[in-house]
Image 1 (cartoon, rainbow, N blue to C red):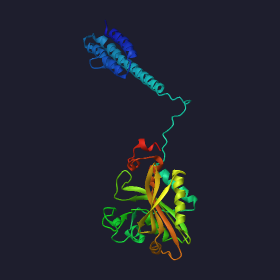
Image 2 (cartoon, rainbow, N blue to C red):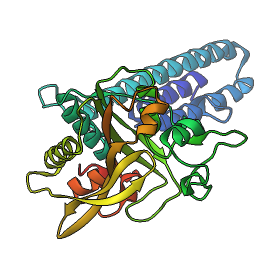
Image 3 (cartoon, rainbow, N blue to C red):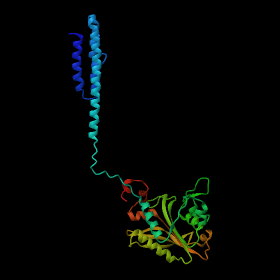
Image 4 (tube, one colour):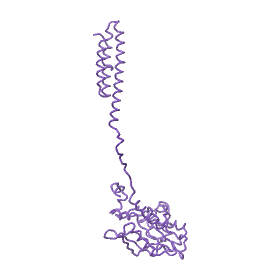
Length: 329
């Protein structure tokens, strides 16, 4: 058999093998089997030297044409495989636009944020404004202006976070905003102050960082009865008409008289906050004449209100960031 005939047989075999290659890897192996250094076409070329001189030219020309033809078939098969793969991918990832869309996961407000907004809305309905202030406060605003004596236990490092190399503290209550606001406002006025506060404290109902809301009302005829009526209305708004309050005589440097306030919780009572009539010295420190004006103040933990409303047994669940807990509210 002549070299040209051999090449015709190789081309027939190559055409069939290339057409049957199932994927790109198999196609590359088929191409190497025909056009590689040890391939079928190379084997024919190695035998050209043994041919008669007049046969060598046609044989070499036929070999080059065979290479071109095989490359053309390989390219065509490669394009066919790529098109088939793309078509299969489109079929596998087909989007049926007639199907209803997948609902995205919707977030929701943290229980503390929910309670804070509810509280603010209640007091704004009574004509209270909402005031705010910095969380790093001066010793004067946090203690001095509020009638805390120099040796008061609250000023001890066991109770308060002090800012290094300064007399500033992380505010231990939202009352410093009372000082800031009352020093700028002209009576009569009433406002509330929600915000974060910081103390050395940690147990199931206390946390080193927690949230408070305080309220202040100053006028010429403000009384303790006004304070109790406001707090009863507030408690029953938050916890329902069955909510009861209990007032216990207490001492705070910034109110006189002062009381601790408990709210009914289950079959018992839970300490909710403190309240009282604003101490005349505090009014005076804020530039308000205590002989003409008087007022009341109250403060309670937002976190504890969230615990009561949502039956949360441990305050740390509010701050652990466990989505399994938080998404229940």
